[in-house]
Length: 244
Image (cartoon, rainbow, N blue to C red):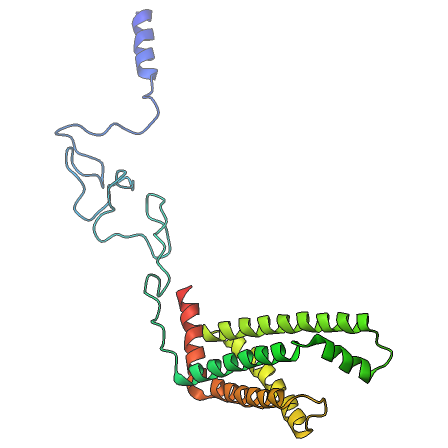
């Protein structure tokens, strides 16, 4: 009797294990808010437990993650391409006549300057005598050293001018500005030298070459300053920036 009582008390005193109740089987009434056994939630609704769809599947139709948030799988939205990306660069604009005339005038000025330098330095002894006649304290060695330095410096200036002309031909506006500055200085000082006569005793050939150089420099500066030239340099700058 005691054993039966103990057994009944032991059976009556047992509690069900903790945890969620088992899902009802066939023929049983499911809890409130859950679909019957063996059926799926209605189309367009999530499951009653609020879980996300299985990995690799899309969320239910009509339910998308809010704008600016990640999708339910933790993947951020794909970045969009910047505007204009992948589009071909603008076509180059044909070089106008004013640019051709301006660059050609500067090239002709450079060539005439080289010819004048060759003629002037073809007789170094005469140049040394001219230097010594102007200042009797100058020795022959000093005069030859000064002549050599002048030749080297002149060649460097010619190389720099040729570099600026090349970049201006390629549509670099900064090179055009440099040619403006150098050409303006040449025009101003050349005009003063022409108005002052040939006080240095230069030959008639060198004087005529200097006049032609001055005129060509003036033509080059004016031609590159005209409106078609400015528009072409502006277009070339925009095309290079768009192609980057």
